[in-house]
View 1 (tube, rainbow over the protein chains, first blue to last red):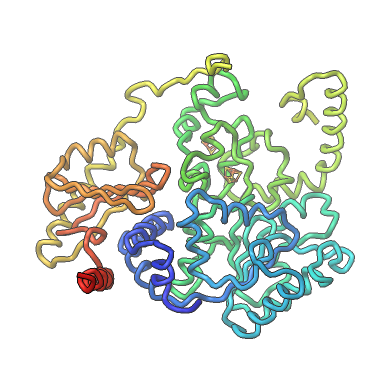
View 2: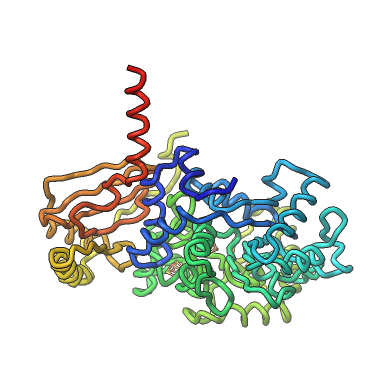
Length: 360
Length: 138
Ligand code: SF4
Ligand code: SF4
């Protein structure tokens, strides 16, 4: 339904103060000055909702889950009030030909103006036959939808960098959106899954300023991906003092020391977990005792083992190089060796230890 | 199974561990400047406390310096928010919580009345309509 946002919010019992409070927090998370919160609230309250088409490709629906099932449905649900979501397979009531018709209508009515959200990677193998919707390949649909889009938001590591479908040996020939579309502005919101507030933040920025936020060299919004997990990690004082947990249940682990030696990829991972946290600000992976996997970086799946300590600490752009080398040279051999070891351990009813997995 | 059966013991940080960083005193100076600006031009301002590297000890120190004033406002909007005037009139300590009670953002606001407390004219107009509706039924 058209009309200013604040009216449709009011119809759902969301008060102006709730909205103001939400914008203040959002501005704070985006590292905008406090006065921006009010400017955002004013601009967004009056904004007309842009048409959004959301295409799911080779994905697990985890990104949609992350966003729609976040802690505070009324607030994160606001994004669905800020936009007119004209096509989203998982959420829409229509199915089959009706759904496809809705997509084509929206694309025609809002040509050149709609926002295209993509989750999932695009398989190019076998002419794209690995993933089709209504008999049409993902790559074909992406090219068609990109033509009329004002901008594209690649949600999740799969759409942004290829993600797990692209993991070595990449059987479907999966590529990220940016490999296919070259002539439209693209924002990457990686994460496996991405943090809901990052998604909302980008939409809010688009609605408020009519433009996409400032991006880093990997196409990610700087406001959320400007710093590494390590920069903002509350275990950082232990790293700086050289106090590391060596196993998951030793004295150091109990004392909350740094997880670097247990394979934490925080020093090379740009994401907002350490500040935005997960599950409504309850906690985040490092806080619950596990190192960062590096899920918002390209090829994190092939970066040499989740429990293997980084060889060179705190050099931000390192991970891509490490990943490429491991993938090409030892990646495949390593994974087979580990599988054999796991099988042997199972037979002997022995638990697999970290050391088993990391010895190659 | 009782929780004691899980062989994990919580170790609390040793006192003195989360010490002062020295980042708080410059904030007080900035605040003084902002209060002066409020007096001279009427322009409100705010400091975003989550944007700064402050330890819990720093925040306690700041709160201590600012003290508490006469007014404490509680707002129920998708979780509780508190807007408390400090001992320095015009300086408000604002904390937003989500529905789970976690702090989502924290500000020091410098204003005669924080924006969130004021009623918006559009909302007042809606209120008036409702009043008139109930009057018409009398
Ligand atoms: S290595 Fe990981 S656990 Fe250690 S300080 Fe960095 S991000 Fe935190
Ligand atoms: S801690 Fe690291 S791996 Fe885990 S969700 Fe955050 S960025 Fe991804």
